[in-house]
Amino acid sequence: MAASGINQLFSMYSNDVYHYIGYLIGFDEAEDLEQEVFIRAFYSWESYRGESSRKTWLLSIARHTAADELRKRKRKKIIRNLPLADRQIADLGNTPDILYEINETNKELYMAILRLKESYRQVVILRGIQEMSVQETAEILNWRPEKVNITLHRALHALKKEKERFL
Image (cartoon, rainbow, N blue to C red; front, side, top):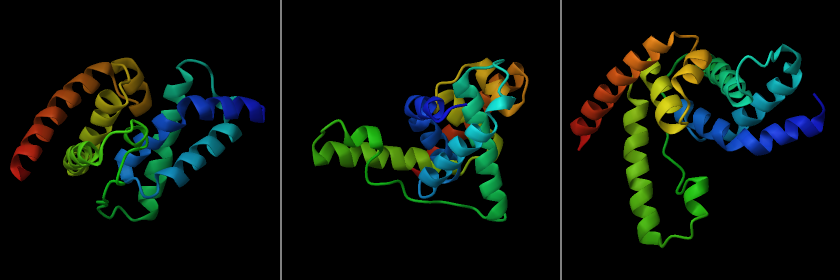
């Protein structure tokens, strides 16, 4: 793949990769790992068979990159604060009061997601936040579509309980 091709993929999907990694392991290292994903994509372009969308392929690489990072940290629990404003929210030009409310809501949801077990967290991020289809999620996680649906149902139930516990 030429550098222009990876630049095109980066401009199309970098925000998705950044948020996916951020929700998985924390936003503090998300930008560095986002770069790592695109470096890995560049070097493994020949392995892309076109059986799934490029976004699905990139998020699969992101999943493996995040898992590698977690292994480096020896599976410590990681709870980080959200940045003051998400990239997209900062661009909206909202008043400080609105930004504060949005940020607090996002922080509560983020913290609740981080408290979920890993399989639940994965499916909530892919289906609920990244808005991937059941099939795309199944491909990224190497699961059957039925498992994605069942796990999402259980994860949303656990997320609801988790939020109620801290409210």
